[in-house]
Image 1 (tube, rainbow, N blue to C red):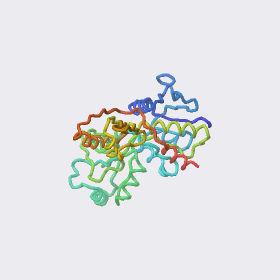
Image 2 (cartoon, rainbow, N blue to C red):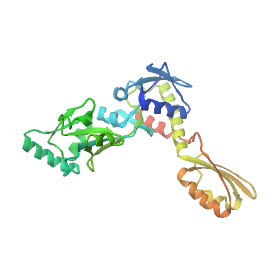
Image 3 (tube, helix red, strand yellow):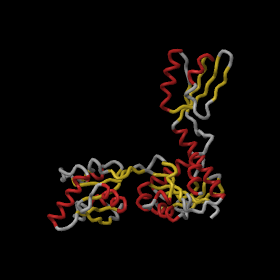
Image 4 (tube, one colour):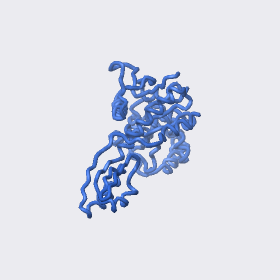
Amino acid sequence: MSQLILAVPSKGRLEENAADIFARAGMPLKRAGARGYQGRLSGMDTVDVLYLSASEIAARLREGNIHFGITGEDLLREEIPDLDSAVQLVQPLGFGHADVVVALPDGWVDVTCMADLAEVGGAFRAEHNKRLRVATKYTHLTAEFFARHGVVDYVLVQSFGATEGAPASSAAEAIVDITSTGATLAANNLRVPEDGVILKSQANLAAALKADWSPEARAAAKQILARLSAYQQAMERLVVSFIVDTKDAALFDGFGLDGSRRMAGQDETYLDLVIETSALQLVQNILSPKQIGMTVSKPDFVFSPRNELFERLAGAIL
């Protein structure tokens, strides 16, 4: 496949957020009809866009029949146990935040950590002659996490929806599920033990290392990653502009990042400094005693001399 294939979520907030971030990066997604499952990336004829479910995107990345996909890290780590050898998490996208957690009934007041759960599992089996049941759709993540914490007396119950209702319906004693605010867990009288967070997940742009990375696909990937990186860097940068006495210009030598410029005259120097957002107060602290004002603006893009995201990907797919 010479074209680069990009898979994005087909519905819901994930689709909206993915469309928004590509639009802000100057590459609007164009879907073929409101319910179409194909599309394109504006200005990039060598990119085909597929609209798939988040779980199918994870599966396609595992198989290597798409190049890029946007989906949650939770699904990737559940679907692809050997994730690091098959997929590269290229860039976290800052949306779709949720935690994969262990949740226990509120009534288990003596169970505050995973070590307590390991003890309860053994006691439960001794008393009831059966293992404690844990309902989840995250069977791989759960088994791996429980093994690390020494929890062995349990059995997984596959859940296909409404996992948080399993304890109340006597389908399981505990659950592993995903939560954003914890409100649904609380409404079902469940709580997370103090060390019960398995994974803090968010949407990622992920690359399939096993895909056919043709020269055309690589060139398209390089362009996409340059744009996304420039947009993401701009989100964390400000441009401050001011004029200082030339003899004082050296005070700001350590502030300017890529894209900064200065025009030095004999008496005055004009500076446009690209700075980290967190450095704004430091610049102001230097200028204020000198009674020098400044203007502050937000850049749309900050392009670095190196495309580090693509360099890392290219090194992995050689």
